[in-house]
Image (cartoon, rainbow, N blue to C red; front, side, top):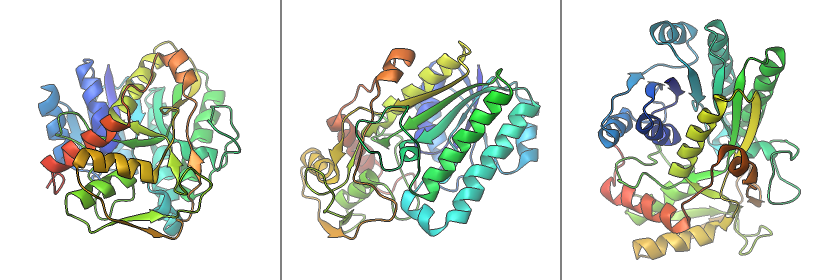
Length: 336
């Protein structure tokens, strides 16, 4: 199949491109490179020995999308493109709503125009807000605590409305938890521009000497050690989940929702200490105030994805931190 991957040069998108190419799909990537690197796609081609097609463009530009859909016979879209930092979204909410929601609306309009009705959407566990109990199943109430999560939730609702209006659509909403890790080759990984918003790249940059110490946002949560608990999932497990969801769309399931997580939560300090063991060095850190929009704990019940997609997370925390460290020590300055 010919698959359009929006945001395909980004962290999760580039790893998913590896899975798609290895399965024999033709991959077309659109990415504006606002928080990604074209070199990631070159390395994807090197890893797989296969070529993809890249457009350095923005999905907000409808005429560009129309040109891509005119040029290629696209069978399905995997939609990653969007701003993604919870804390940042509380500071620049209008930018998040415009970029994430308007961009998705433009994409969906063009898909409808060209009768491409197969979509895998990159949603997030943030749509559950602050859950009343754990683990989280797909039928939990949704209520986001921050602009990033609300943008994802609203796009989900748009997808539901589209499906209800036209049941010929097949849409997989993938609510995934906290991706970390890197491809085992060490050739691609997470390389945020500027100060990292996510835990693992920050720890890795401290470990490699790029930053002085890690800031831990709060140590007074009702958790095992007071720091926030999250369901960390290896990015390659996540990438394989998208591939499985794409296979599911071929069975014409309508609109389906899946959690992609391990089902186990780790605290910030647990992840930090696991990284210290792999890197064989102490990681300096200090405690600062809680970050706006954060919650105490969040982890998945992934059984539905196992049952309906035949997917499970196969890599453990050691794999996640060791692959992150392997990427970082071979690319201390990222893709530069």
